[in-house]
Length: 102
Image 1 (tube, rainbow, N blue to C red):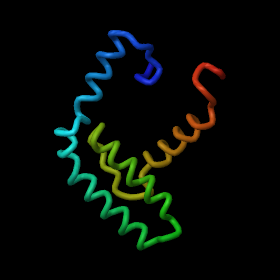
Image 2: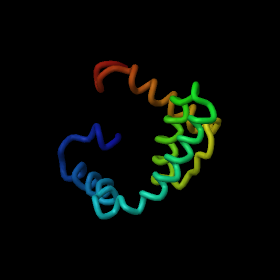
Image 3: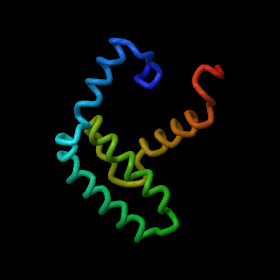
């Protein structure tokens, strides 16, 4: 069960408080240097291989999320978590609305 599928309840509010706190305005400042570093790397990658701009953009987004959430560094577009995240995104986008399919 993930937060997006929890019904409005004290349990959902508890999870939301825990997950929302690190992303309040005063706290997101700590991620600015990471985002700047990853943006520079993304632009550099796009300049080196313009035809792969979409893959570099995916790496950028995945690198930020994995670094903030789990401390995992995604240094290039060949990292296995990029393929894993892409596959998960595809499955989620093509599975239909929640509770409408198996």
